[in-house]
Length: 450
Ligand code: ADP
Ligand code: G6P
Image: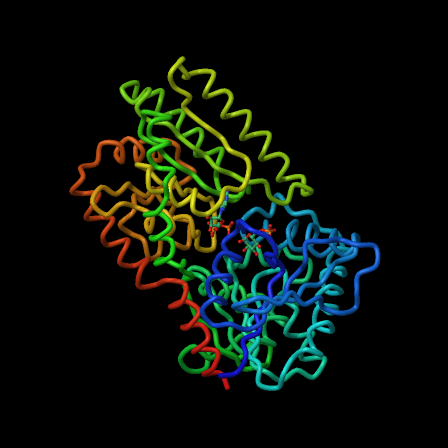
């Protein structure tokens, strides 16, 4: 079997990765081996012109540094102040700066140059996410003929948001240099097809083959999963459960998200406030734990969301707390995975209500962590990619605080029988469509492109 070379912007070199991409890739590479290339997380005055290798079982890692100006332009600028907001339906939050688009292209070209000398002729190359859209084009320009696939972890924008990019046609030219484009959900495949039809040249051949900007490639949907078996084991072993139960004495509702404006955290806090206003019988019976580690704080929109969230939590606690009960606890830092698994298991409600999300792995982790004899209820936004395959959750519109608060009330009084029925169907999906199923499906499809 030829070597798998994975490349993503984020390369976890420490413990406790948070973010769906690193969690999934770490799980995938553990089973297949290979090489994972990514950003070291360090900005330096003079970045090295070679990759730094970090050997270790069961797969090899290689990292690159970035100059401060490149980090600002490529990561904070074009990736996270143009592409991220557009892919999540927030054109109003974009900050378009021509220099940032240049920096984005420049960094992708540099990564291609750093990679190329380490590539073998039979390597399969798997590129991840929006930070690296131009990478295949840059590798092709250096003569790389290997199969190159792209997987987009976040939503693909529809025509209106694509058109808000500085040079929309360029996006499709970049994508045309891959052999396989992978998306999380049917929604993304449809958006891609419609956007390409309006803003570039796309022709449908047979099956999943298309001609995009004159080049033949394939595209398909590959919903990402988690390492379900190990997550189930972590949750079973978690010792945190009993400790937490004695601490709170109320049923727990849990939310776990990077503190990102796409996650709908303020909307969920408002829904909780409404629940407490309309259901006084739930006072002291429900406690909401929101775990939200900081992310991309150098981008203004992320500083704003932190202020808004802390302010709202304070206001709700001020309005409803008693000497024995704090309605919302807000933890603003990463948590070890085994502790997270135990917290999910203990929570009667898992609240996953993003305004837009590629898949959302927390929804799957929550289901995997439950005790099958007394499982909790997943409340899931219709705008998470996960909603396409997790219809047994209570599906909600995250913009509608009334609907969300009624779903919370319903989950609180749902019978054990109904909870078990819903959970067993959800769990079957999470077990069958785990991270190995996802990566094997993607890599089989990549092999078919040759
Ligand atoms: P995203 O990729 O947008 O961050 P996902 O829900 O797909 O969203 O993935 C988030 C991943 O990060 C999950 O595996 C989740 O367990 C992990 N995570 C989120 N918050 C924390 C936290 N506070 N501590 C540790 N892991 C976290
Ligand atoms: C999402 C994106 C990833 C990203 C992660 C964390 O999962 O799809 O590409 O790595 O968020 O964001 P960060 O900017 O910290 O890498």
